[in-house]
Image 1 (tube, rainbow, N blue to C red):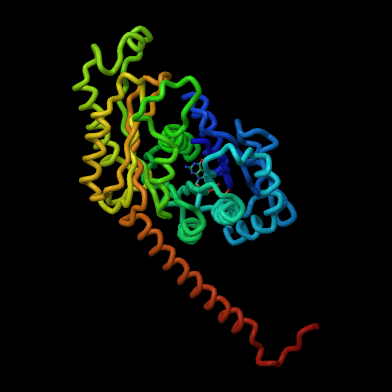
Image 2: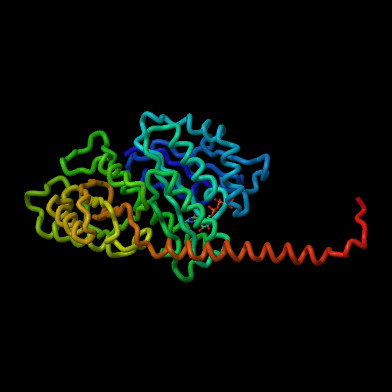
Length: 386
Ligand SMILES: Nc1nc2c(ncn2[C@@H]2O[C@H](COP(=O)(O)OP(=O)(O)OP(=O)(O)O)[C@@H](O)[C@H]2O)c(=O)[nH]1
């Protein structure tokens, strides 16, 4: 399906940049437009692929291009005050050609965490296309303010989008990695999963369109429950030699049985392995299984068996399935989208820690106010200058 990608804040911009690279690499054609919005000049300058005219600096009057320093109330205020500038950038998107908006932001900071929900609300009011969010949760070791920001932004963002796709940095950290190196790797993991999902619904000119190819309406229907979503992915490297590809079709010399088994087990691995937001799979309301890879490794029976297995696992009758043939990749993979998940320990934990942090902050403030009053108390015996 065709998307307008809007990255808000540093993480949002970097992930959108990475989506552009991935779209090129798989010749996907799912990115119709890409915009990056930030209150920090250096973050916008650091991007590689988002075009310069689509990098939008906001809040200059308030923060002079220096970012909001993880103050997400200020991030939200700046987005509201600059909504006309944001609309100006969106006006450059050929909106009649897109199937949906995807607003991407890190939820722990200030600019994206505060601004993304404001933008989503605005897009919902102005346009008829679905507005999806891709929210990135901070690591648990990032500190109280990031957790509090993420919990508050998450609550707000969910209400303003048609569906909030979530990626949890905490579940994807690796020991011994530098923060920057870590993010580069993590960002590639993010775009591979969400990129393959959205690319799947994009029928390209010249494609051999089999009946079982995923359509954008199947993605939209799976995401139309106003909930929270998570994605799993599993893949296997396969040989793609041109001769093999051109000479084989799914129903001649190719070993159909092993293709079926491979896909069925990849669906299980994707679902039971590391999800972008770990959760209890049984709590999903809807699901979509997409098999991607060289066309002759894709097979309807394999997807169908995987789809049925997912129905059993989730108890949901709304599990869709289909193919996404890609000739340029030597990987067969399955994407599993679980939508409307409700049993998510990380979100419960985030909210508990945030409530504690909010209470502690209120107590500390109240005590500080009292202490300051007593420090300055001279029993009316000392006059102020004015
Ligand atoms: N996956 C991923 N997460 C990132 C990346 N950069 C930052 N983050 C996460 O996103 C959160 C928010 O950080 P930023 O995006 O830098 O914040 P911002 O929206 O620019 O806001 P301010 O810097 O406060 O103005 C951090 O707490 C990290 O968890 C990145 O490149 N990839």
